[in-house]
Amino acid sequence: MSIELNQANKRLVWDFWTSLEASGPDAAEHVASSCMAPDMPWHGPDPINDLTGASEFANRYWRPLLHAFPDLRRSCHMFLGGRSSGNPDGRGDGRMWVGGTGYFTGTFTRDWLSISPNGREVNIRWGETSCVENGRITETYVLLDVIDLMMQAGFKILPPTRGRDGVYPPPRDDDAIFLEPQDQRESDFTLDLIRRFIYDALNVYDEENLESMGIADYFHPNVRWYGPGGIGACFGLKEFEDLHQRHWLHAFPDRSVQPLDNLFAEGNYTAAAGWHGVKATHLGRYLGCPSTGGPLSVNGLDFWRREGDQFIENWVFVDMLHLFRQFGVDLLKRISPYGYKA
Image (cartoon, rainbow, N blue to C red; front, side, top):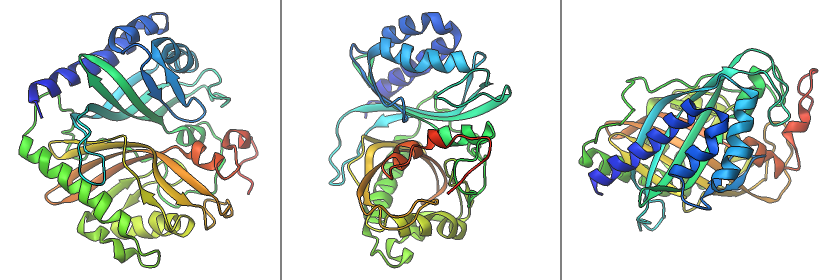
Protein backbone atom coordinates (compact mmCIF):
# COMPACT_ATOMS: atom_id res chain seq x y z
CA MET A 1 0.00 0.00 0.00
CA SER A 2 1.26 3.47 -0.85
CA ILE A 3 1.50 5.43 2.39
CA GLU A 4 1.47 8.69 0.43
CA LEU A 5 -1.75 7.73 -1.34
CA ASN A 6 -3.39 6.69 1.91
CA GLN A 7 -2.45 10.03 3.46
CA ALA A 8 -3.86 11.95 0.49
CA ASN A 9 -7.10 9.97 0.67
CA LYS A 10 -7.47 10.64 4.38
CA ARG A 11 -6.88 14.37 3.86
CA LEU A 12 -9.61 14.46 1.21
CA VAL A 13 -12.21 12.78 3.45
CA TRP A 14 -11.20 14.75 6.57
CA ASP A 15 -11.41 18.04 4.65
CA PHE A 16 -14.78 17.01 3.21
CA TRP A 17 -16.23 16.32 6.65
CA THR A 18 -14.78 19.58 8.00
CA SER A 19 -16.07 21.68 5.10
CA LEU A 20 -19.49 20.05 5.20
CA GLU A 21 -19.93 20.94 8.86
CA ALA A 22 -18.61 24.49 8.40
CA SER A 23 -20.57 25.39 5.27
CA GLY A 24 -24.19 24.96 6.39
CA PRO A 25 -27.12 23.42 4.52
CA ASP A 26 -27.24 25.80 1.55
CA ALA A 27 -23.70 24.96 0.46
CA ALA A 28 -23.92 21.21 1.10
CA GLU A 29 -24.40 20.20 -2.52
CA HIS A 30 -21.51 22.39 -3.68
CA VAL A 31 -19.19 20.99 -1.01
CA ALA A 32 -20.21 17.43 -1.83
CA SER A 33 -19.79 17.86 -5.58
CA SER A 34 -16.26 19.19 -5.06
CA CYS A 35 -15.24 15.91 -3.40
CA MET A 36 -17.54 13.24 -4.85
CA ALA A 37 -17.33 11.59 -8.23
CA PRO A 38 -20.36 12.23 -10.46
CA ASP A 39 -23.15 9.72 -9.78
CA MET A 40 -21.30 8.39 -6.73
CA PRO A 41 -23.28 5.62 -4.97
CA TRP A 42 -24.03 6.45 -1.33
CA HIS A 43 -25.41 3.65 0.85
CA GLY A 44 -27.14 4.72 4.05
CA PRO A 45 -29.44 3.52 6.81
CA ASP A 46 -33.04 2.47 6.31
CA PRO A 47 -35.27 4.34 5.41
CA ILE A 48 -32.83 6.62 3.53
CA ASN A 49 -31.08 3.70 1.82
CA ASP A 50 -29.27 4.23 -1.49
CA LEU A 51 -28.61 7.66 -3.00
CA THR A 52 -26.71 8.76 -6.09
CA GLY A 53 -24.48 11.80 -6.46
CA ALA A 54 -24.02 15.06 -4.61
CA SER A 55 -27.54 16.38 -5.18
CA GLU A 56 -29.31 13.40 -3.62
CA PHE A 57 -26.74 13.26 -0.82
CA ALA A 58 -27.40 16.91 0.05
CA ASN A 59 -31.16 16.99 -0.44
CA ARG A 60 -32.20 13.60 0.92
CA TYR A 61 -29.65 13.07 3.68
CA TRP A 62 -27.57 16.01 4.84
CA ARG A 63 -30.06 18.90 4.63
CA PRO A 64 -32.91 16.98 6.33
CA LEU A 65 -30.47 16.02 9.07
CA LEU A 66 -29.48 19.66 9.61
CA HIS A 67 -33.12 20.73 9.45
CA ALA A 68 -33.93 18.44 12.38
CA PHE A 69 -30.69 19.17 14.27
CA PRO A 70 -29.75 22.73 13.24
CA ASP A 71 -26.72 22.98 15.55
CA LEU A 72 -25.35 19.58 14.49
CA ARG A 73 -21.63 19.03 14.99
CA ARG A 74 -19.45 16.01 14.34
CA SER A 75 -17.04 14.46 16.81
CA CYS A 76 -14.71 11.77 15.54
CA HIS A 77 -13.57 8.91 17.78
CA MET A 78 -11.64 7.04 15.12
CA PHE A 79 -10.18 7.84 11.69
CA LEU A 80 -8.16 5.47 9.52
CA GLY A 81 -7.48 4.38 5.97
CA GLY A 82 -6.09 1.48 3.98
CA ARG A 83 -6.43 -0.96 1.11
CA SER A 84 -9.41 -3.30 1.32
CA SER A 85 -9.17 -7.09 1.55
CA GLY A 86 -12.74 -8.19 2.15
CA ASN A 87 -12.91 -11.36 0.06
CA PRO A 88 -12.95 -14.72 1.88
CA ASP A 89 -10.31 -16.15 -0.47
CA GLY A 90 -7.87 -13.39 0.42
CA ARG A 91 -7.94 -11.56 -2.88
CA GLY A 92 -7.65 -7.84 -2.34
CA ASP A 93 -10.06 -5.74 -4.36
CA GLY A 94 -7.37 -3.09 -4.86
CA ARG A 95 -9.55 -0.23 -3.64
CA MET A 96 -8.43 2.29 -1.04
CA TRP A 97 -10.83 3.25 1.75
CA VAL A 98 -11.07 5.80 4.55
CA GLY A 99 -13.34 5.34 7.56
CA GLY A 100 -14.35 6.83 10.85
CA THR A 101 -16.89 6.76 13.63
CA GLY A 102 -18.08 8.98 16.46
CA TYR A 103 -21.06 11.14 17.37
CA PHE A 104 -23.21 13.75 15.71
CA THR A 105 -24.36 16.01 18.55
CA GLY A 106 -27.20 18.48 18.21
CA THR A 107 -30.52 19.71 19.54
CA PHE A 108 -33.43 17.62 18.25
CA THR A 109 -35.85 20.39 17.21
CA ARG A 110 -37.86 19.00 14.25
CA ASP A 111 -39.13 15.62 13.02
CA TRP A 112 -36.55 13.36 11.39
CA LEU A 113 -37.46 10.06 9.69
CA SER A 114 -40.91 10.49 11.30
CA ILE A 115 -39.31 10.53 14.78
CA SER A 116 -40.74 13.35 16.89
CA PRO A 117 -38.20 15.70 18.50
CA ASN A 118 -37.66 15.99 22.23
CA GLY A 119 -36.17 19.50 22.11
CA ARG A 120 -33.02 18.30 23.83
CA GLU A 121 -29.42 17.68 22.87
CA VAL A 122 -28.84 14.14 21.59
CA ASN A 123 -25.87 12.12 20.40
CA ILE A 124 -26.28 10.18 17.15
CA ARG A 125 -23.74 7.42 16.62
CA TRP A 126 -22.33 7.48 13.09
CA GLY A 127 -20.01 5.17 11.18
CA GLU A 128 -18.74 5.76 7.66
CA THR A 129 -16.37 4.26 5.11
CA SER A 130 -15.54 5.93 1.78
CA CYS A 131 -13.64 4.69 -1.24
CA VAL A 132 -11.26 7.24 -2.78
CA GLU A 133 -10.02 6.89 -6.35
CA ASN A 134 -8.13 9.49 -8.38
CA GLY A 135 -8.73 12.20 -5.82
CA ARG A 136 -12.50 11.71 -5.60
CA ILE A 137 -14.83 9.84 -3.26
CA THR A 138 -16.36 7.15 -5.46
CA GLU A 139 -18.53 5.20 -2.98
CA THR A 140 -19.66 5.62 0.64
CA TYR A 141 -21.31 3.45 3.30
CA VAL A 142 -22.94 5.18 6.28
CA LEU A 143 -24.91 3.94 9.26
CA LEU A 144 -26.52 6.03 11.98
CA ASP A 145 -27.85 4.38 15.12
CA VAL A 146 -31.49 5.30 14.63
CA ILE A 147 -32.71 2.98 17.41
CA ASP A 148 -30.41 4.61 19.95
CA LEU A 149 -31.70 8.03 18.85
CA MET A 150 -35.30 6.86 19.34
CA MET A 151 -34.42 5.73 22.84
CA GLN A 152 -32.90 9.13 23.63
CA ALA A 153 -36.08 10.77 22.31
CA GLY A 154 -38.12 8.70 24.76
CA PHE A 155 -39.53 6.00 22.46
CA LYS A 156 -39.26 2.38 23.57
CA ILE A 157 -39.84 0.41 20.38
CA LEU A 158 -37.98 -2.78 21.36
CA PRO A 159 -37.90 -5.00 24.46
CA PRO A 160 -35.56 -3.91 27.27
CA THR A 161 -31.94 -4.09 26.16
CA ARG A 162 -29.96 -7.05 27.48
CA GLY A 163 -26.70 -5.10 27.32
CA ARG A 164 -25.89 -1.60 28.54
CA ASP A 165 -27.75 1.27 26.90
CA GLY A 166 -26.07 4.40 25.59
CA VAL A 167 -22.46 3.18 25.72
CA TYR A 168 -20.39 4.26 22.71
CA PRO A 169 -17.12 5.78 23.94
CA PRO A 170 -13.93 6.69 22.10
CA PRO A 171 -11.13 4.11 22.28
CA ARG A 172 -9.82 3.73 25.80
CA ASP A 173 -6.33 4.76 24.64
CA ASP A 174 -7.81 7.79 22.80
CA ASP A 175 -5.27 7.25 20.03
CA ALA A 176 -7.28 6.47 16.91
CA ILE A 177 -7.34 9.71 14.88
CA PHE A 178 -4.72 8.70 12.32
CA LEU A 179 -3.92 11.95 10.56
CA GLU A 180 -0.30 10.77 10.37
CA PRO A 181 0.87 7.49 8.78
CA GLN A 182 1.10 4.37 10.93
CA ASP A 183 3.56 1.48 10.99
CA GLN A 184 2.74 -0.68 7.96
CA ARG A 185 3.81 -3.86 9.76
CA GLU A 186 1.24 -3.17 12.48
CA SER A 187 -1.42 -2.49 9.86
CA ASP A 188 -0.65 -5.73 8.03
CA PHE A 189 -0.79 -7.74 11.26
CA THR A 190 -4.14 -6.20 12.20
CA LEU A 191 -5.62 -6.92 8.78
CA ASP A 192 -4.45 -10.53 8.88
CA LEU A 193 -5.92 -10.99 12.38
CA ILE A 194 -9.32 -9.55 11.51
CA ARG A 195 -9.52 -11.66 8.37
CA ARG A 196 -8.84 -14.83 10.37
CA PHE A 197 -11.37 -13.76 13.00
CA ILE A 198 -14.13 -13.20 10.43
CA TYR A 199 -13.55 -16.02 7.98
CA ASP A 200 -11.75 -18.67 10.06
CA ALA A 201 -13.72 -18.24 13.31
CA LEU A 202 -17.14 -16.64 12.86
CA ASN A 203 -17.87 -18.72 9.78
CA VAL A 204 -17.12 -22.11 11.35
CA TYR A 205 -19.95 -22.17 13.92
CA ASP A 206 -21.34 -25.71 14.21
CA GLU A 207 -24.81 -24.33 15.15
CA GLU A 208 -24.60 -25.89 18.62
CA ASN A 209 -21.59 -24.73 20.67
CA LEU A 210 -20.26 -21.19 20.85
CA GLU A 211 -16.81 -22.63 21.54
CA SER A 212 -16.75 -24.14 18.04
CA MET A 213 -15.86 -20.71 16.63
CA GLY A 214 -12.81 -20.14 18.81
CA ILE A 215 -13.85 -16.56 19.56
CA ALA A 216 -11.71 -16.64 22.71
CA ASP A 217 -8.63 -16.83 20.49
CA TYR A 218 -9.48 -13.43 19.01
CA PHE A 219 -11.46 -11.53 21.66
CA HIS A 220 -9.67 -10.54 24.86
CA PRO A 221 -11.38 -11.84 28.04
CA ASN A 222 -12.06 -8.19 28.96
CA VAL A 223 -13.22 -7.14 25.51
CA ARG A 224 -15.54 -4.14 25.35
CA TRP A 225 -18.22 -4.79 22.73
CA TYR A 226 -20.21 -1.62 22.00
CA GLY A 227 -23.38 -2.96 20.41
CA PRO A 228 -26.08 -0.89 18.69
CA GLY A 229 -29.27 0.45 20.19
CA GLY A 230 -31.63 -2.41 20.99
CA ILE A 231 -28.75 -4.79 21.77
CA GLY A 232 -26.48 -2.73 24.01
CA ALA A 233 -22.88 -2.90 25.12
CA CYS A 234 -21.24 -5.96 26.69
CA PHE A 235 -18.23 -5.81 29.01
CA GLY A 236 -16.12 -8.94 28.81
CA LEU A 237 -16.21 -12.02 26.62
CA LYS A 238 -18.62 -13.92 28.87
CA GLU A 239 -21.10 -11.05 28.89
CA PHE A 240 -20.79 -10.76 25.11
CA GLU A 241 -21.62 -14.45 24.74
CA ASP A 242 -24.45 -14.46 27.30
CA LEU A 243 -26.15 -11.17 26.45
CA HIS A 244 -25.69 -11.00 22.69
CA GLN A 245 -24.09 -13.85 20.81
CA ARG A 246 -26.16 -16.67 22.28
CA HIS A 247 -29.43 -14.91 21.40
CA TRP A 248 -28.21 -13.84 17.95
CA LEU A 249 -27.18 -17.38 17.04
CA HIS A 250 -30.42 -18.83 18.43
CA ALA A 251 -32.28 -16.63 15.95
CA PHE A 252 -29.82 -16.97 13.06
CA PRO A 253 -27.88 -20.23 13.58
CA ASP A 254 -26.73 -20.54 9.97
CA ARG A 255 -25.54 -16.97 9.66
CA SER A 256 -22.49 -16.56 7.45
CA VAL A 257 -20.23 -13.59 6.76
CA GLN A 258 -20.15 -12.82 3.03
CA PRO A 259 -17.57 -10.96 0.95
CA LEU A 260 -17.48 -7.50 2.50
CA ASP A 261 -17.73 -4.19 0.68
CA ASN A 262 -14.56 -3.12 2.45
CA LEU A 263 -12.23 -4.43 5.15
CA PHE A 264 -9.10 -2.43 5.90
CA ALA A 265 -6.70 -1.68 8.72
CA GLU A 266 -4.28 0.99 9.86
CA GLY A 267 -2.05 0.58 12.87
CA ASN A 268 -3.89 -1.47 15.48
CA TYR A 269 -7.37 -0.45 14.27
CA THR A 270 -9.53 -1.94 11.55
CA ALA A 271 -12.86 -1.15 9.88
CA ALA A 272 -15.37 -2.99 7.72
CA ALA A 273 -18.65 -2.36 5.94
CA GLY A 274 -20.94 -5.02 4.53
CA TRP A 275 -24.32 -4.36 2.95
CA HIS A 276 -25.79 -7.85 2.92
CA GLY A 277 -22.49 -8.69 4.62
CA VAL A 278 -24.16 -11.41 6.67
CA LYS A 279 -26.74 -13.84 5.30
CA ALA A 280 -28.88 -16.06 7.48
CA THR A 281 -32.23 -17.78 7.97
CA HIS A 282 -34.53 -16.43 10.69
CA LEU A 283 -35.09 -19.62 12.68
CA GLY A 284 -35.61 -18.38 16.24
CA ARG A 285 -37.29 -15.59 18.19
CA TYR A 286 -35.27 -12.36 18.29
CA LEU A 287 -35.99 -9.20 20.29
CA GLY A 288 -39.65 -10.07 20.56
CA CYS A 289 -40.12 -11.17 16.94
CA PRO A 290 -41.00 -14.81 16.28
CA SER A 291 -39.18 -16.78 13.61
CA THR A 292 -40.26 -16.12 10.04
CA GLY A 293 -38.33 -19.08 8.64
CA GLY A 294 -37.21 -16.85 5.80
CA PRO A 295 -33.83 -15.75 4.49
CA LEU A 296 -32.43 -12.37 5.43
CA SER A 297 -29.32 -10.23 5.16
CA VAL A 298 -27.68 -7.82 7.57
CA ASN A 299 -26.23 -4.41 6.75
CA GLY A 300 -23.47 -3.52 9.18
CA LEU A 301 -20.38 -1.49 9.99
CA ASP A 302 -17.69 -2.50 12.48
CA PHE A 303 -14.57 -0.97 13.98
CA TRP A 304 -12.06 -2.87 16.13
CA ARG A 305 -9.03 -2.05 18.29
CA ARG A 306 -6.29 -4.65 18.60
CA GLU A 307 -4.16 -5.04 21.70
CA GLY A 308 -1.35 -7.52 21.13
CA ASP A 309 -2.80 -10.48 19.26
CA GLN A 310 -6.43 -10.02 20.36
CA PHE A 311 -9.20 -7.49 19.88
CA ILE A 312 -9.96 -5.52 23.03
CA GLU A 313 -12.69 -3.15 21.72
CA ASN A 314 -15.36 -3.48 19.03
CA TRP A 315 -17.76 -0.72 17.91
CA VAL A 316 -20.76 -2.23 16.12
CA PHE A 317 -23.48 -0.88 13.83
CA VAL A 318 -26.40 -3.00 12.63
CA ASP A 319 -29.14 -1.46 10.50
CA MET A 320 -31.92 -2.62 12.81
CA LEU A 321 -34.70 -0.97 10.78
CA HIS A 322 -33.54 -2.89 7.71
CA LEU A 323 -33.26 -6.12 9.72
CA PHE A 324 -36.73 -5.85 11.25
CA ARG A 325 -38.29 -4.90 7.93
CA GLN A 326 -37.29 -8.40 6.80
CA PHE A 327 -39.28 -9.75 9.78
CA GLY A 328 -42.29 -7.88 8.40
CA VAL A 329 -41.98 -5.17 11.07
CA ASP A 330 -41.62 -1.43 10.43
CA LEU A 331 -40.02 -0.14 13.62
CA LEU A 332 -40.83 3.46 12.72
CA LYS A 333 -44.53 2.59 13.01
CA ARG A 334 -43.96 1.47 16.60
CA ILE A 335 -43.22 5.02 17.69
CA SER A 336 -45.70 5.70 20.47
CA PRO A 337 -45.78 7.58 23.77
CA TYR A 338 -47.08 4.39 25.38
CA GLY A 339 -43.88 2.37 24.90
CA TYR A 340 -43.05 -1.03 23.47
CA LYS A 341 -45.78 -3.60 22.88
CA ALA A 342 -44.81 -7.07 21.60
